[in-house]
Amino acid sequence: MRVVGVDPSSTLCGAAIVDHPQGVVAVGHWRREKRSTHPEALLSWFRWLESFVGVWHPHMAAIEMLSVERNANTAKVVAFYQSAAALCCKMHGLVVVEVRVSTARSIVLGNGGMSKDDAWEVMRKRYPGVFSVKTSGGIDEMDAVVCGLAGPTAAER
Image 1 (cartoon, helix red, strand yellow):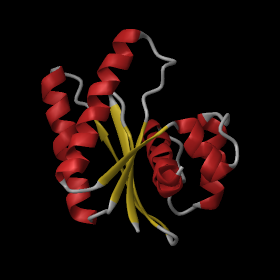
Image 2 (tube, one colour; image 1 turned 45 degrees about the vertical axis):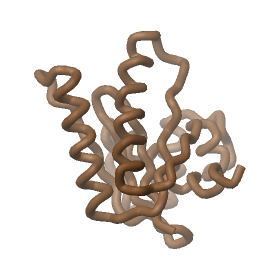
Image 3 (cartoon, rainbow, N blue to C red; image 1 turned 90 degrees about the vertical axis):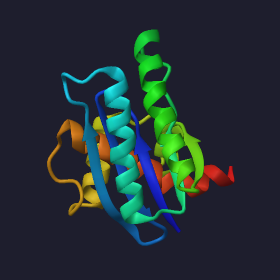
């Protein structure tokens, strides 16, 4: 089964293609252009993800659920990007599941309370050819991989 994992955000969104049980096939990220308006950025994200999904033809999408640790305005903006991702994936006929990052990390790494930095180190060791340079794009790609790996198990729960 091929899964697209998605880590939506308002400025940088990660995406990954994972084949179960083989492993990580591809990772990528979209970055918002600084001068774009909110509607322009949403459309840009939607088109980027649509292209990514169109190239890799996954069967399922595992989209990171919005974290409530952010302020209300940021949460509202991120929810738009999450919704655009879900809409894009549904338009491609994918089964879509929402996954809490803590649940995904628990399934994949055995510790749902693991920080992004700690998760990065574990994933870098597991997939040295995929994760080498710790950048903001790399961190979001890593979370997308974790969501993709956790997707089928999360859907069964």
